[in-house]
Amino acid sequence: MDYWLPVSVTFLVSFFAIKLVKPLAVKTGLLDYPCERKVHDGHIPLIGGIAIYFSVLITSMVFIEHSQNLNIYLVAAALVLFLGTLDDRYLLSVKVRLISQIIVASLMIFGTETYLQSFGSILGFFEFKLGYAGAAVSVIAIIAGINAINMMDGIDGLAGALSLIAFGALAFLLSRHTNEWYLLPVLFIAALLAYLLFNLNLHHSFSKVFMGDSGNMFIGLTIVWLMIVGTELDTPAFRPVTALYILAIPLIDMVSVMIRRMKSGGSPFTADRQHLHHLFEAYGYSRRYALVAISSVACVFAFMGCLAEIYFVPEWILFTFFIFLFIGYALCTQHMWNRLNSRKK
Image (tube, rainbow, N blue to C red; front, side, top):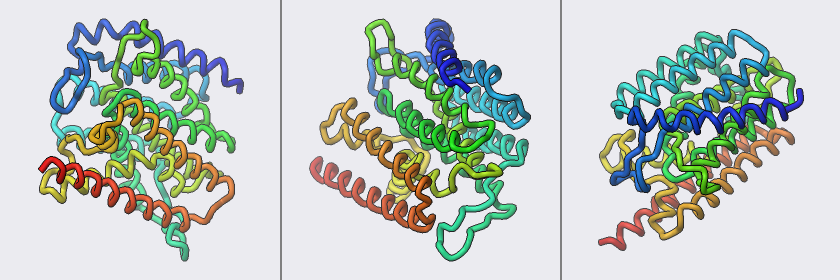
C-alpha cells in the first residue's frame, strides 16, 4: 500500500483536531495547571491524546482491513482514553486507575485471545513457555507500558518523542512480514508529528498543548499491544526480548524510580521528581538538552533491537545485556541523586 495517503490524512486530521478541540478543553476545564511538580507557564490544554486517537481511529477504519481484533483494540483504546481524560480532569486515585487499566487490558487480551505464549530462549537452555499464565503476564505488560509512557511525560516533547521512536521500530519490524497491523504504527507516527508541532512550539502560531494522561495511557496501551501482536503472529515479526529494547528508557526508568520510592519507604506509585529528565534538570541542563539526549539514547536502544532481530542475535545474549544495562542505569542514577542530596546538606 502507498503510505503517503494514510500518513497525510492522519497528520492533517490530528493537526486540525488539536485546533478544533482546544477551545472545548478550555471551556470544560481540561487543562494542566502549574504546581510544585509541574513547572510550566499558563494553563495548558490536555487534548493531544484525544486528537491523536481520533486521527488514528478515522484513518485506521479507512485504510486498515477491518477485523474483530482491530475493533476490540479501538474499543479498548477508547476506554483507556476516556479513563485518562477523567484522570486529567478530576485526578483519579491510583487504585481506580489501576483497576480500570486491568479491566481494559483484560478486555483486549481475552477478547482477541492474543497474549504472550513464551518469553523465548532468554535463559539460553530452553524456551521459557508461559502457558495459561501468558494472559496474566500480558495484562501486567500492558499496565507497565501504560505507566512507563505516562511517567516519562515530564518535559515538553519527551513522551511524544519516545513514543515516536517505539512506533518507528515497530513499523519497521512489522513491515518485514505480511500482517494486518503493519500500518497502525505508521499512522501513529503521523499523528504524533502533528502533535509535536504544538507541544514543542515549533512555530509561533502553534500554541502549546499537552498529551495528557489520556494520550500517555492510550499510546502506552497501543505500543505494548503491538509488541504482543508482533511476537504472536503466525510468522512472528520479532522475538519478545526485542520489545525490551524498543521501550528501553521508559521501562528502565520506571522500574528504577519505583525501586527508589520503595527503598525510601514510600509508595511506588507516588508521583515525584526523580525521573531521568528531572535528573538532567537538577544538574543544570536545559529541558531541550534533556529531550535530545534521552531521545538519542532511546534511538540507539531501538536501533540495537532492530539490528539484533535482523541478525538474529541469541535471545539470552540480548536479555543478559539488557539486565546489565538496567543494573548499570539504576546504580548510576542512584549515585547521581545521592551526590545531589549530599551537596544540599
